[in-house]
Length: 320
Image (cartoon, rainbow, N blue to C red):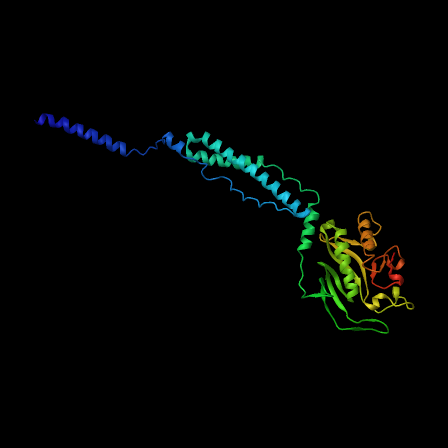
């Protein structure tokens, strides 16, 4: 009986050793193809979904239509790129699925990022008049409270001061000091009466800002060089009293634009670059102001504009 126990034990040892060897084998094994097919790398989107645009309301202004058009065109362009990138990701990942799932996803993502820059189209050109429309929207958005305003208009920023009493007929009964007109700064405070302040507001709001438009980014400030001053016309020793002596006049030497450049009456009136704009600013002041003088009037106004609200016979204007 002992003679058959030895072969039996040898078989048991051989079978057990084989099982142990198989369980201790640390070599990596390929996953079944079915697992690779079940893995769907496109389950999570590679490109974040875009929010839906609000429905376009009727009755919008021309400026809002221009802005809406730019946003819509930009959104459509970005969505087209997103669709192309997602499609490229699906094709690349599925094609490489058999080579190893982790490696194929990493390589395809890098390739997509590189190809995405090549496929991105140039941005669409903005519609004509877009900058002007945006400038007007910004101007309309400027609102003022009554606190800090004078002469009954929110856009005239300043404060009231005590009555100005000057020599002889000089003086202002109800003076104000104005520092800003409809969002446009004055380089120095204007000591004037409310008639002149309201005329200045009307000219800046209705004419000066639209005339400058988007030139240099738009109008930033007005170079004011004179307001109230007890003196005769043209600072003469004899003659009629100037409207400056009554708080009815302002003198303007130029205009500063938002990009830091300036339009000087002295240097720009006869230039081809600033001349047309300065002449238009001079012309549009005739109406809000009763007297408008510039470089073509006389030698005393070669370097500035003179605006005043003096009353003329017949209620007319004097503009030179």
